[in-house]
Amino acid sequence: MISVEEARAIILSQIKVLGTEKVNLFSALGRVLAEDVLAPFNIPPWNNTAMDGFAVRAQDTRGASREHPIVLEVIEDLPAGYVARYPVGPGQAIRIMTGAPIPDGADAVVRVEDTELIDDRHIKVFVEVERDQDVRMAGEDVKQGTIILERGALLRPADVGLLASIQRSFVAVYQRPIVAILSTGDELVDIDEPLTKGKIVNSNGYSLAAQVLECGGIPIQLGIAKDTPEDLEEKFSHGLKADVLISSAGVSVGDYDYVKQVLKKLGADMQFWKVAMKPGSPLTFGIIKEKPAFGLPGNPVSAMVTFELFVRPALLKMGGHKRIFRPLLKAIAEENIKPVKGKTHFVRVRLSTKNGRYYASPTGPQGSGILRSMALSHGLAVISEGQNPIKAGEEVPVIVMDRSFEDRESMSLRIEETLTEDKDLHSHDPGHKEHCC
Ligand code: AMP
Ligand code: MG
Image (tube, rainbow, N blue to C red; front, top):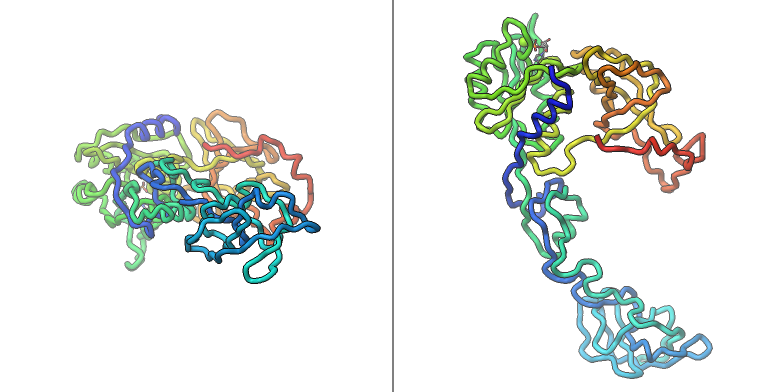
């Protein structure tokens, strides 16, 4: 039996990044950029005013004060979106609105509140301004020719805005992996079939599809295969049109566990059968015609946990993501947690925060078939093989799958208000900082 780390390394070393496709900017959110994007021009394209006021020659305001204002002639009104017709000469000013280009001749802006109208054509200026004061310089946001977004970036709303600001309507992104999911077992019925005695509902097909969606893949349901080599072979063959194949159940040592045998027959070069972990020990991985095939265990929790640890990073790598692992944090165990002999133990836990620290509490019975314990959890506490039992109050590393436990921002945005007891945020143990696993 190989360790979780060894299994991960074997899998990831054989996963290749998929090809790219062009998407419309409206579909770019959440996709992974497959090109370095260069700025084709400066942003902003020209010097412009950061304030409503008057474009002036800074030198003309020298010596101006409340007591000794300087009088300037106003030669033009310039709203945003227009260009001045005249240059600003000595003793002159142009009324200018935020965002309007700085007229020729002018090199600073006097804010409207530092002036007073004398008549239609003249103002008093009460302050001295420096050169470039309240001027946004051309290229101060983005300089022409610089990389504004790097290949591998996960596109967020601000990135979409940045792409729009350089008039990109299409952008190259990595393809989303198409993942064929096969549920195997004579005992399975689908969600819309009669649940007669001896049958169970194919929940794995749905939880695995949801996990595929959550990490950006496109799930395809191959349905339910009977525990016969013929049916498995037919359905698996069909699944080879996808980028990745996942099956659940039929991988242990039972009389009807044909998954390994069928994957081999289809040409899979199987890499391992079992991983030293609980839940989820029977697990197989191989490559068929350059496509990764994962035979996950059947128990609902085992299927989800093995997906989480092995399939998810593989799909993220295929999709061009740079960060393929979940955040790992250290939390204080609220109960004793036992290791499992010879295996890495993944314990479903609920997380909470108190006084800036994370706490982890097991979600009750940890049987591999108890899906509710998975649904109640925020993460998986990791107890490595050979480790001493974790006592309540001791730290345990937790893989975070759901961040909904974290403190919410309050109306006032004042962090003190979210702390009820210990107000001393600065007493944080630096050991509680997050790491990436
Ligand atoms: P197996 O690996 O075939 O021995 O299956 C292990 C356990 O997982 C059995 O109790 C199965 O009934 C259950 N199981 C298998 N496939 C599914 C599925 N698609 N959805 C929910 N439970 C399943
Ligand atoms: Mg079975």
